[in-house]
Length: 109
Image (cartoon, rainbow, N blue to C red; front, side, top):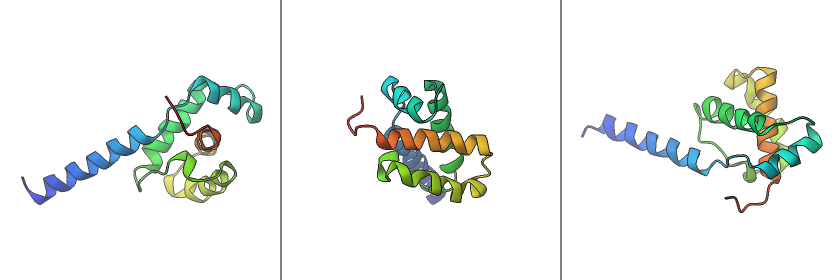
């Protein structure tokens, strides 16, 4: 196997590892989100997760939501949104996902 193929395999393994480590929103997360964003659905949180995976993960390894305090995520996303070419709606979805999951208890099913 060539060095190029090994590099591609290593990158694919890293991406798969990030996806597996990134928590999926649960029903309890929807309730927590609704206190700050009334009307939030599980689909809204899943959409934010998907945007985070696709758009932010294209340039760098993804950080787990719990790596930062919930209050820190909005400024991080605001700083990175232009680089990721996120619309304001996409950035809002990513912020909602990261803030809610950052505040969730660490033990997830």
